Amino acid sequence: MRYIFIFSLILTFQSFPQGKSEWFPSNLNIQPFTANFIEPRAGFLFLFGKTEIELDIGTSSDIYHYTKDNSVFSFGADLFTYTRLRGESHFYFPVDAVDYLFGVNTGYKITKLNEEYGFRFRLSHISAHFVDGHFDTGTNQWRNGRKPEVYSREFIELFPFYRINGFRAYLGLTYLFHVDPKGIGKGIYQTGFDYYFSSLFKENISPFIAYDFKLDNIGKYFGGNILSLGIKFGKYNSKGFSISFNYFSGKSIHGEYYDITEHYTTLGVNLDL
Image (cartoon, rainbow, N blue to C red; front, side, top):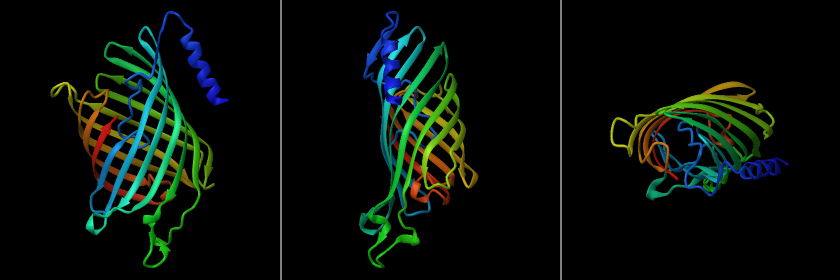
């Protein structure tokens, strides 16, 4: 029913003669929120002081845009993987844990001079798994005594935002309408910002700072923080390549470690597809 509703919206917008319809546009209507972890990434995060690497491969693609005056409605799809690798000698990188996300999204944005405001809505599924790199063949046991368990969640998510020049602030409201294990709460609450200093250098080189604060409910609420400092090569609101230093604190981003608290800094290399 949800998918029928979304496609009905598309057909409704397309039927209005005063607007413009575009299938498979080249750019996203709503750009990813830089410090929010559940966003499309294609790159590496090298964890300082740990023999671990984060390899993320994902994309969001808009399938349809409907443009009328200074507003754009969009419909698209998300496909992500988030993978934790362990670094070993001889350039081996066993895969410890992987999370999969797929879903659909809609967005609505209004642009006025140097301002933008609107929202992004997503309907998504995430599942998490331990992989063979988490199994110690020497002892014939799962590492750290942590065995695989079912981790799955389906959720809806709403992110309203406001942007002026290169500064964008947002709120995040997520409701998990199905989740395993059962001890995870239904609500997730976020706020954050990203700021691209696109006027400091050439148009295609943009230093940035971004921050995200998230409240997760695992028996009780826990705060999580992500701070990113970096440079993007390419227009700040389009495709490009970025290098960043990042600080993370809070419950693990990987579902199989959902109840583990982590603190680390990373060097990130990312292609914004």
